Image (cartoon, rainbow, N blue to C red; front, side, top):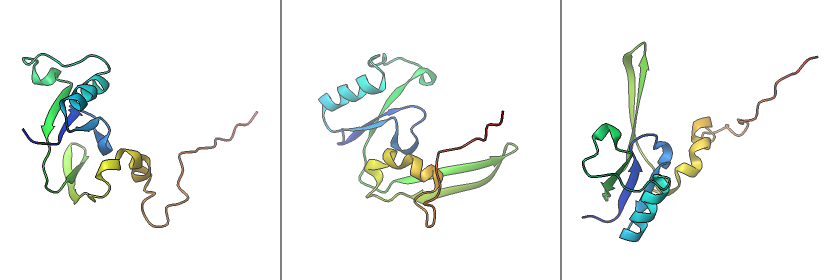
Length: 120
């Protein structure tokens, strides 16, 4: 039921990594093959903690992102933001820019390059 659907890893799906949108059974099979690294589908009676992939029905509504910040085991802040629908399809491509804050004003000088001084 529902179209499209999303084949997702059960962990580490930040910025759309580990998530594939499918609109047909053929796309579903290809997504399972890719995300399982050739392992295929798991049996239906696989325990929840051992499941590697899930199938999620798509929805036409808004997409939100939630983040929680803990300090010494206590929740100190949480955020809920509405995602830009024009960027949803390419969040994975923008992952590094989002992490480094390059999408923020005046952030052009940030880099992943690090130069260490080596002395004899």
